Image (tube, rainbow, N blue to C red; front, side, top):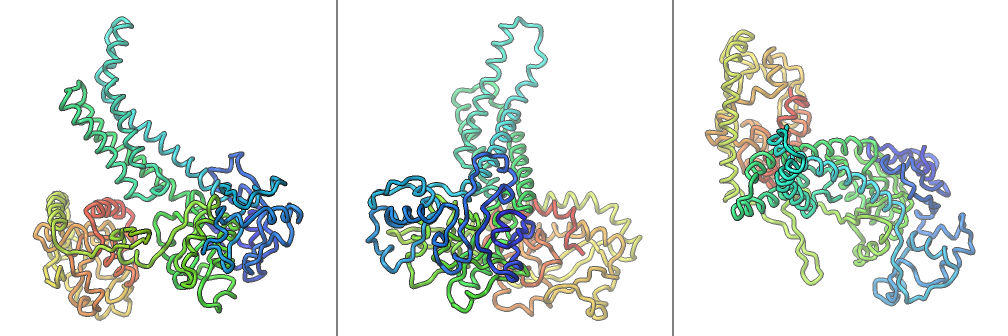
Length: 620
């Protein structure tokens, strides 16, 4: 058990992403934490000698909203008296004692960093002299693992860019003929000057596009988009320069180095992302997070963080606002996982320091305290890395949200979704290209399947079924036949064994499925003929799941929004579990796609679909 676990009475279960609050329910909070040892920090930072152990305040004092320093600790009461008589509260910037945010009724807490600074000196400070807050341990840990992971990306990018730019040029000159050394040096210097210039511009572009920023670690889409943007900028500028100066060897860079380097860069980022996500299963390279808000909002945020594929946040506790009847609870259970309830909204900064949390998520606050967020941000200076404001609006709008400040007032702008226009023309063009490529694959496997399917079960090669498309229009969807003839008539006899969600009928072990059909379903090869529907315009390559007519009649007003765009061969439902999803999860994913799709997201879903096909999760 780590020191943090001993101090809080909670077992850290990083694989499940929470603190075990069962110990809290049994014995309550202990008096004083033992400090923070290297077991509580990411593995990548354990070998650093920059860490310091700081005594933690008793957490039971945080729950009561009292300053635990008054109970005494290793520094002694005399030091605390000097610190408290040295001036105003350190969380208040100098000269702001009379600010409306810090009046007599404002509850402001001490900053741990400021306490340590004041204890180190016996000379009292002037009340009007501001002092920059010192860096807290949680923030030190966060910055340390961020630097370590960023260095990995930097060295990988450096190696990839050099290989991509220098290797093609080197293959043209090696082995060198028997030339004098001076002449060989001159030849190599002239030959590799341009590749080194290209590599330098490429690396500078990657830095300018902030492709190694901590905010995009493990994000996938955003990180890849920045790599693509940086590469496009670098080679676009170099191509324009080539038109002017006609530099020797530029064609080689554009035709070989560009595609080779871009592929290797994306492959490297993908590999490090997979490594990062694996490490986060064990609690490394994560943001230790404290959630503040009303109980329903806190539950919603914790559920969303748990579903997040990036696994970037490890929730270590929650602070409840609102109804007093919720404050006596020791823990909050979300999806069967208990999370400890600690402190009060006014002690959130100190609670975060106690739990070594570097991120605070505020999802709701008391309407009677409009300055709460601003005051909390001041208290967190030097002790936390991020203060995040959460909103349920993101589940509805997603990427359609933008922030537009007006005279200091942050206005959240939500772009109204549209279902026609130029984006849909581009989507149709992409569908035609993808359908033509997909039909080539269909042609390759149709010949052997035309032999195997009838041999396994007498009947036709293809199966046609009525489905509902955009705006409620029906069409005949084509698939390779995977069941025996007359399977539709047997549904009534098998309805008792339904494993499907909502109005869907699915069976994990369906007796109607043939032996060849079971293999085709496991690999999703039975859906390849649907590229013909895509080419005809009935379907799209990516979209919501195509529903059956009897399913559509059960739709409510909200669920029917799935019919606003064409159904797809694949989609978010395909890469998120397919038949293993509940009905509500399936609807939520479809509606999210309908309102927030983009061409880039379509390409990413297609790429992930190829990978999902080989794992067959939820395919039956």
